[in-house]
Length: 115
Image (cartoon, rainbow, N blue to C red; front, side, top):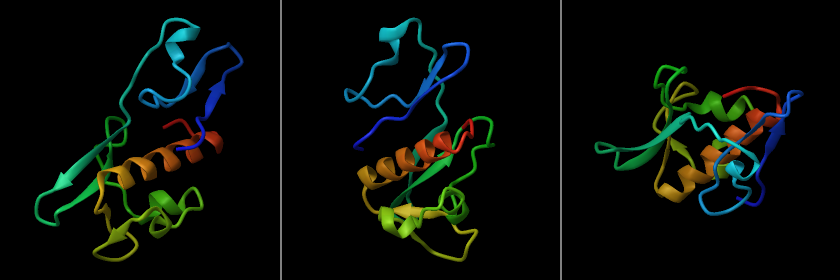
């Protein structure tokens, strides 16, 4: 990931992803609150990784529409499906799933959506 998106609210609050040893550490600006919004899990049957929402989005696995909703083609992020437009997007490599996760979440953040 080449950039980190940070949104600053009118009240001075900041919102952004934790970039694990890279990027801005939010706690340097005051008390930080952390919430998990996604999980990357292994599908033992398909032998591939997939991303799923955690918490408010009802633990739903990411399908093609999650990528399309921010104008992205999942194939450009090394993703593949085993079905149609409602199919879950899978990744051979864990790192590719992480990259896709960051790109989609930050794109949604730039579009003003709270994830």
